Image (cartoon, rainbow, N blue to C red; front, side):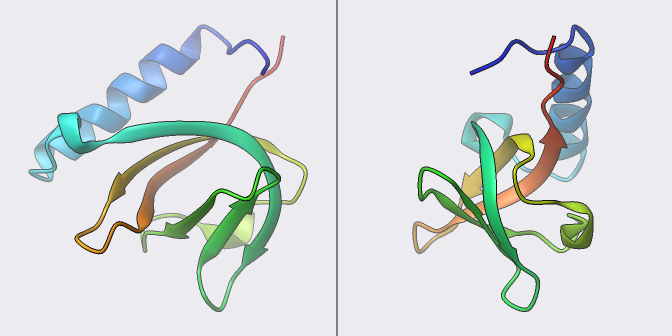
Length: 94
């Protein structure tokens, strides 16, 4: 995929800092990147064009995510193996 803007590292570091303050171990957080195919606001479900799907955490502003956007997602797996998106960021292309 594309290259990220240098601020990406600072944003990810900030996200990990917030997660640490919420007692979510960063080791459990994973990352994904892709292009948004759809966002189901009722189910709070984001699907990428590759078929990968994420349940959006309440803190994620689902209504601001648009189709065809290239996004960077910080997520964790819940106890049922579902991918819970803790943060969805726009990927900045060079």
